[in-house]
Length: 384
Image (tube, rainbow, N blue to C red; front, top):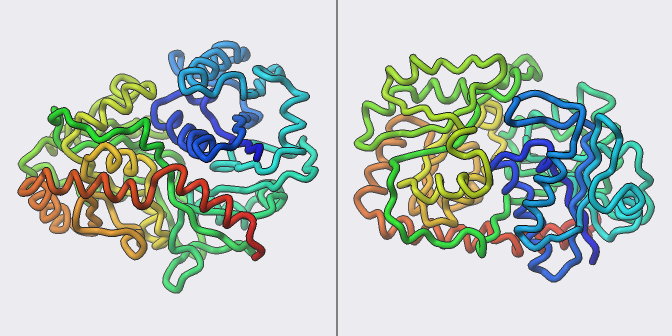
């Protein structure tokens, strides 16, 4: 099969963003398919050094080419610079042919704006990575809904969407469930001893809260604040690579006074290599989820956490409902309270070798990229 994966690697060439889309490319390629990467968000290029948008995408295109060549994906890519409408890589003609005639197009996180493309015979898949926020936007933004409705089938990382008790609206669509993939061959079991304590990589607040049916659904800042006293209860340092969020409102000094070690993501995880090193040097992950994921009982699970597990680093992560579908208690722990966090930390530290082995097994059994991508192909071909 000829499979197209969309993404935002050129636009935002940061560590976590790069891996997020790479795992799909590597998973489909590992199954023997011809894989292409398409980036066409319509946005002006972002310069991560200047931290602003610019009117020239040549550096973004060069960085994208460097990354894809490093992973053996060669010239199988197209990037459209929204400021000049220039198609970098294989060019506009190839991009239009791929969108029209490939066997499968997986629009990961809805990264590609496909309004200007003909559909042809290609099966378009929309893959939602932001459950609740995506669905509310579809119900309140007609333009966004029009683009999503052009896709033939729709997947979500919200494992509980459609179930009783889940507050995520389905917006008139059938949402098929999927897990975030991790290319295990690129994330081997870490044998080096950890140099950090509990860590995670996050943004204080990616965007403003959304409102649905009289309820407010916020970002990670709200959930993080609920657990602000955790450092005084932990025997290990909690190091958070935390973006400052919209308006740069992260309360850095206050968090540090509470005992959190706050480091800047653009310093410690600016690219795919340092992102991986940060995870592999950690004792384990500790992380909250967006308030919207938790409050809606969406069942969202993080691709970043899958990378910790693959590295043999246990993960203690907030329960959004995912514990109904994934194992919890050995290698991977769900929490809802401070007491849950402390108990999980004590368990990890009392039998670390066992928990890191269990973490890797969970990654192999649930998140292995070829397995996830094969299930996506099979499910996409099934009628609703």
